[in-house]
Image 1 (cartoon, one colour):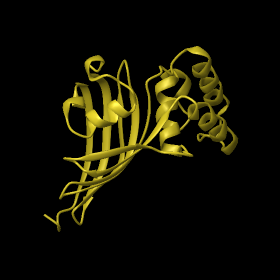
Image 2: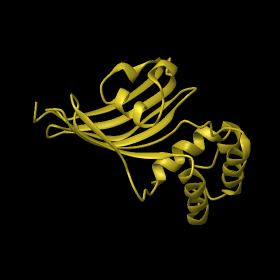
Image 3: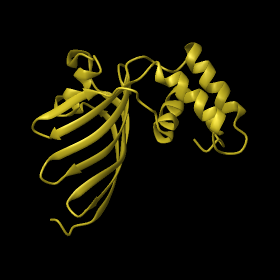
Length: 173
């Protein structure tokens, strides 16, 4: 299997991955009771398999009680190194949602400006929890990351979740 290469693109809908190892540990670290996680409404995964390592470019899950973005690596022998940004607070609507929508509407060049990115990251930093997941699939070690920095892909994910699609069309997010 070490010589196998593959691209993985998957969409999730109305599923409940939180009974699986790693997912259950991450949900617990984010402070979400498994009893309250009936399902996720949607999610997607983009990954590549090469030389026995799955490089998770992006995995997102969204549901009524949790939104999370993750990236990292998983080896075929079960070792994991994944970074997760998650929130249990709804971003749509409310003051933060309106501020994020305003940032997206100011975007006229098709990409978020450096200033816009900095403002969005600052707004999201107070609403999100950052986790590092290491160890193995069978025995994951989930730790809250100190001094986190939110990346461009994670900012884009949360902006898309917080802002109506009609506002975002043509913004490149």
